[in-house]
Image (tube, rainbow, N blue to C red):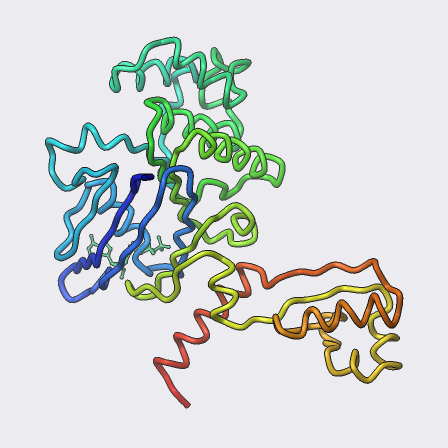
Length: 303
Ligand SMILES: Nc1ncnc2c1ncn2[C@@H]1O[C@H](COP(=O)(O)OP(=O)(O)OP(=O)(O)O)[C@@H](O)[C@H]1O
């Protein structure tokens, strides 16, 4: 049976009058990637701090690889790596020296430093001062320190902010390789488009409460968001065909259909119009996110 890498059960945390987390639960298995999403102040950092054992919940239970992060004597054996949003690196050290320093702290051998530098494509810059590193190189070095001790759980806070698309893609490639080795990953981010195709599940928080939670497919189904079908000449087709006209959305110049209509549309395009060249785009994570936030607002302020 696969064990649970991170388990959070009905956790609440307040700061004075502020209820930062209200009965939040999650479960993450080895190799899975969870997107922790929400507006500013939603409770993401509070949850991360609890998982890291930097703060103690008022109620509920947290386990990381079966251990309680809140108990000091268990913290050393959590096997957890963390890349904070604003990673502070010692600029006057070289990349190699910096990792060597962390390796000493974590009782990791020098050969692991070489291995990690090579894996994150930083070996060519190991003797350069960190202050000369680009933003992407600094992020990779931050990831390098986080994975140095081969953690089974990795928490990344806004890891791709400020990176160009190529550097972001490389970052996610590196994360995918870690996941293939069984590392469970939690990524806290506002960059929804970037994380969309990488995550197994999402937890969307708002004012400390879980707004939505599950795999992206589950969230799509729950929110009944339409699928977009893009076809060249969609407007012309819609003007000549009543069935297509009913499905045509002029704003996106595409056909927008619910799950149950999708097969009907595709059969009609291929069978009746002999069109085989189309793009079927399920609702994106940003669309699911917007829908969750909208639903929450309607519940809070019903018309
Ligand atoms: N140490 C603290 N003392 C008082 N209030 C706090 C403390 N830490 C967090 N809060 C409050 O708890 C709520 C959740 O904050 P948190 O930092 O977890 O949000 P977040 O989702 O990480 O936001 P952001 O996206 O801006 O980083 C906010 O209302 C915040 O002001």
